[in-house]
Image 1 (spheres, each protein chain N blue to C red):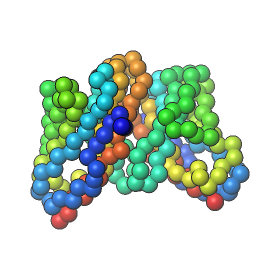
Image 2 (cartoon, one colour; image 1 turned 90 degrees about the vertical axis):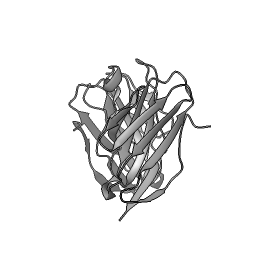
Image 3 (tube, rainbow over the protein chains, first blue to last red; image 1 turned 45 degrees about the vertical axis):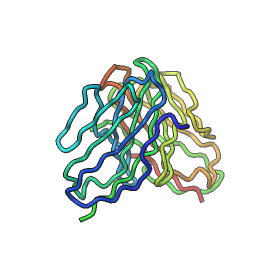
Length: 111
Length: 115
């Protein structure tokens, strides 16, 4: 079993749709959580950190459930420009090194 | 924007050649990483460094080597390139701070093709 698992893609949605991505992690000692976005043939870029209380950045909402070891990303009112691969990222305890990138979920937003 | 730079961005070389992919960051980060990623596939960590004179192999076995003589510089070397080394190589860095300081920043990547 992989340490970080994401929904298999791709997700094909129309513009304006709401789409949710899920991610589970196996190491209960994990302490930092992120969503990265990666465009085709580009480098991954930080989309948002994920906090225990949940957090929102415009149309994007991230949630963390430590008890279930589960992270989610919700995108509301999808835009064509949201088409990308979304990577779930989990990091070990502060001071430790281990950072695990999920395999990513591909999103296609169509007009 | 992240201040991490990779050169060359694109390289086509013949089998058996020695190559070095350069990576520099100006953020003063102590941790640096090299990832390998084939198109449409997941990232694989091949090397990392906690700081100067520290290098470790990552999760994916690689024939490449790295060095960390200066904080800002983390070059990756292939002594004898083979077609199986054709891939994108992404350099990244982060600092040791908690919370948002844990963010990993990536360079734009080096696309290597070995013919």
